[in-house]
Length: 349
Image 1: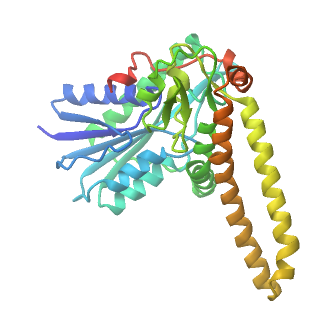
Image 2: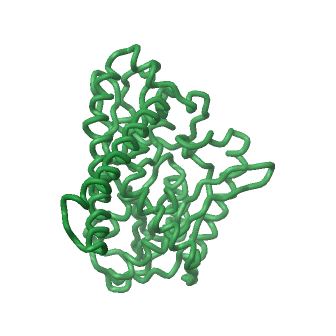
Image 3: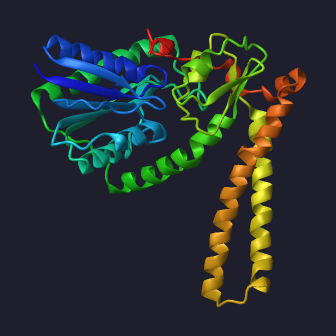
């Protein structure tokens, strides 16, 4: 009997659902299988396994930052057989299935694992109902019933190939690898943190703290029975989708105010650098341009911190006033559906 482990990160349960299928198939085939959910402060187990399976949802054409950090902490291997499954979001548009795109997400993890001497022989994708509720209305129940069985088939195909030992590696192509790497990198560095800062609980919030308890990144803190998001958000959208009162929204006023303030500060800083630095520092033109570029980059990063730490804290104080919270809670997501995979119980995992 072989002994394996499935390492996985899940946001709204699609990946957990896929892992359940994989685990059941392996158990039925006589394998000893362990499932290991990746969350904050969870480290890879030290035991030796005959094989590894990595599963994760694709977030902005990349693996979750937490998943990448976890993979980098895995112990070096002696050519242990390893497979990777990426879970994409899918929708039905004009009666046709439109699958999400993986980009460089799989290849990034594959390279990390290969540097650790894992024998990555199989990488693939499966598509389940889209759940990025911050950006679009999740699938309705009818579309969900169409998409989920198709995703199940893709997962069964993946584990079938795995048990056959078939070598098959996903490749997105050089051009797609470059642009998705850039977008995914920016999302991991800045985007996920910014998106997390625009979450807000409206007047329907009961203070149950389910969002905080279930958050895999532990980025949600309860203050005066209301949730507030820190800058470590993975933007997995679990919180907005599992709230029993559908009280978590994307704050449009907060988004507009933060963007206006940040853009205003950044433009002012760039103008000051371009206008005043040449008079303060006497350098050759090439060196001066280099100095200005470095200062602009530093100013941009610093002002992002200013916007999403001290200024955000100020807005947080304002949100403690019921009338102002109602103002900040104005959002397009109030009319959106919510989505979580059938049977997903994040508090039990």
